[in-house]
Length: 456
Image (cartoon, rainbow, N blue to C red):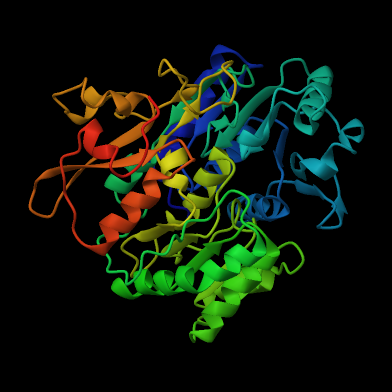
């Protein structure tokens, strides 16, 4: 029997109310990864079916087409459904509920009868470009039925240009539930970062933006040693590693195998649904090293450590990839995030993103007056938010350094600073300092200059 969570029911009700107010609206539902969006899609389809409505469910990944279709077949087998997906060798658009891969469906939209509603899974993929596949398909479907209602579901209600609503792609968010709320309510697994860890050297381990293979190969043994060290603290059982290239994935995996870790590599030239299934349900592999294969649409709830041996180039990809660790699983208390790519300092944490302001370009670095195109996450927008009394002394916090308040083990306030200028990485300095020993100090601008230049 299907167990519906209260927020899933609320989301469906919010969609229903929105379409009662305006039938042909484009609306958005914002639910974090692991919250059960496929159940929401089932509930929407089932309700629309009972009202004798025809529905198109679109997404960009074949795995999601299968997943969403299977959910409806499981609980609503009496509904006439069909699938339009080249990967699945099915091109049927006759169903009352049609599940389509956008890359295939756009070739068949002229063959389909009008729909009453369109549901977009992973709606962050919809952009404002008139020649994008989603826009072409939805405009064609709107010609058939000017009252077509469009609802998008996403864990990331933004793209790399900013919020989808601000760009006019969707009119409004009708329902949202945050990652933090669902963690506090016990529906999602917390994401944590390493505490104080003893490292035996001062090797610069952070991954550069365009790390070459030779440089990566030199760092790989240290990266792997520290990965294993982190995993041993709480006995992490399922590890997922992100690397930017196939060559780097192979290097990282080879180092894991040398140390006796049951590991394998998955990427575009070696992708296997069986490998993912075995990773989820068996103990054949403790670790999978992947290249862009686990960013979206892969459901392995038991993942309890994610390692970034990579700089993620997109806030959407960052959030989506973090979502691989938020699902609950038996015996899993949380998921450890080991970030060798300085992604947290550049992109924020899950639930607290750093978003570019719309229309201001893409320059994240402050100018000489301290102005920046970045919009800080909640509670981190200026020095007053972290309780610094001498604002003038810490003016650098809004012109180059991202301060995050923490509490030490003895209850003394401390500050971790993340530096946005990359001529010298402040985050790298603090990472090595913090992980060599418990380290607390009061830094003035003068003291900061002892570690690195302050260009402000």
